[in-house]
Length: 112
Image 1 (tube, rainbow, N blue to C red):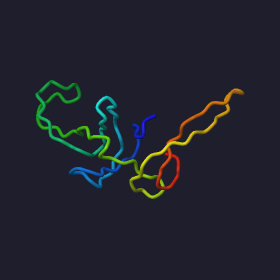
Image 2 (cartoon, rainbow, N blue to C red):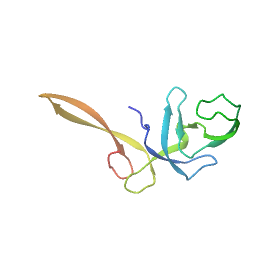
Image 3 (cartoon, one colour):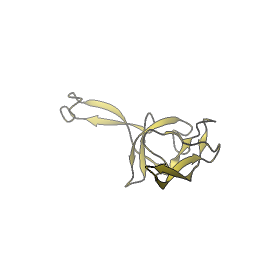
């Protein structure tokens, strides 16, 4: 189970965008990187007709990937960065019990 998932609110702890918060748009698990909304924005030069949604060329500002070690999940209670832990729960389904891992904030102990 991943500690950071798509849709999580994260805060940047290192780099030029340190202190900013954003929502995870995409997780690139093979390279341990994330694309976070509004973070690590870079300017790309686009030729006309190379993108379907943008037929004219020019400068486009997009989010670049940021390494997963440079962000922390935001605690839902304190709105500050927190480490992520796991708790196992037993769930009863159709008369069968199975274990389920739940992500937990280390700062406040609340579920993420």
